[in-house]
Amino acid sequence: MSRPRPITGSVTVAAIAGLATGLLVAALLVAGREPRPRVQQVGTTPSPTTISRSVGPVTVTVPGSVPEPLVVTRVSTPAPRTVTRTVTPPGSPSTSTVPPPATTTESRSD
Image 1 (cartoon, helix red, strand yellow):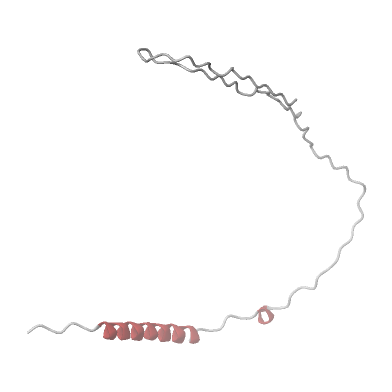
Image 2 (image 1 turned 60 degrees about the vertical axis):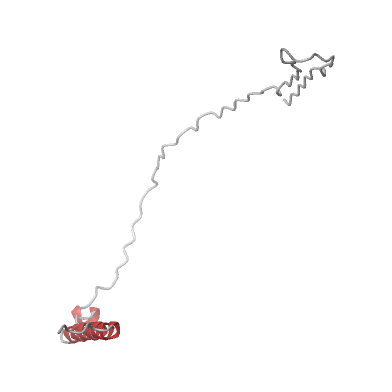
């Protein structure tokens, strides 16, 4: 006979029990340590002393950078030119159709 497989629920319960045991051991280890000494128990802190001194004028030189000159280049492109032509393929009956006139539109915005 083979052993029955554990049910998923029992595996979950075992995992949670293991986690709880680990946390309990960690808490006991932390509780058993000597507490760290607090700052007040270490010693007295020195009282702050204020020392004032008079000094003469001080010259401070800050290296400055000169910005490069700003160059703006403007390129003006003409509007596209539209040309319409009617082409009759060779071997087809020719019809007398007048093609529309070519249009040229130029606009400049300077």
